[in-house]
Image (tube, rainbow, N blue to C red):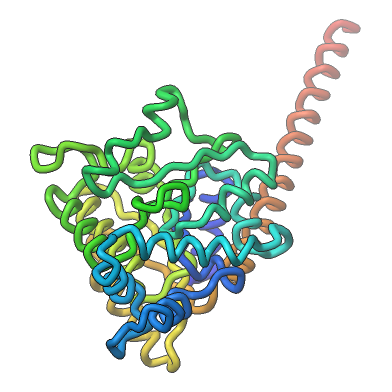
Amino acid sequence: MLEPANWQELAKSILAGQCTPFLGAGACTPTLPTSNELSRALAREFDYPLVNSTELAHVTQFIAIKSHDIVHPKHEILKRIAACGYPRFEGAEPHCVLASWPLPVYLTTNYDDFMVRALEANNRKAHRDFCRWNKELAEYPGVWQREPGYRPSAETPIVYHMHGNSELPKSLVATEDDYLEFIYNIAKSGSMAKTVDRSWEMLPPWIMRAISNHCLMFLGYGLLDWSFRVIFRWLVLSLRQTQRRLKIAVQLSPFADQDANDRAQSYLREYFHHVFDVMIFWGDAQQFIAEVNRHVAQERATQAKAAQAQAAQAQAAQAEDLAAEAAAVQG
């Protein structure tokens, strides 16, 4: 549960550009189907024979095997995403609110380009890239290979896709095999840099710094989501040697009863206690983002008021100095 002090700390981090959001599928509802809805639709179309038709990784694995094409289910996913169109990037829409904050790095496990579109609608020049989670993807030059001097900033932020994006279907982490390969390549060394065991860089240094040095904010996930579990496991592997405790605010879709929520919260805190201070908000992404934005607006007003008071104080001090100088001249 987030206490008032937690909200204030999160708001201050956001306004200072020292918060890194992770976006999950829940940030895209109701424009896009949920993972379960998408999985059931694909299961029906491709005659998935098992009972776990809501498990997208299992269903896409079946489609890949049935079609003898590992990229085919990824095309099917992207086709359905494209058919849904875009949300209206206005008001309390999550991507719209996120785009209004002065953040340099936005991370996502989603495949869509909603965050890029929202940033552009907010007159910010966004870059887009994805994690090279296997050796084949390492052949595609990333933004830092194309623009070696690029530095993510509030004016020119980057949207970085941890599980691939719609521009390159083969980059999607979608099937069971994909998730296993992603985890395997991380586990080789517990980091994203080049190693003896892995000859390519999974994440650029700028992205690693945005994760290891900033407050992290997860929204749009469920505790049982594959994407959420894999990313959190990677965080533990990558950051367990860090000397500072990371602050993480996590929005999670609630379970049916409060006891289950309490047990889940205790589990997360115990599992990550050696690396993170975990703060959990139970609710949907829209509720969470609206509450965060309310505290950001309050903190912005507080900072503006303090700046005005400081300016007035400086102006009064300057006036006193000028008066003293005038008196000295007259004397």
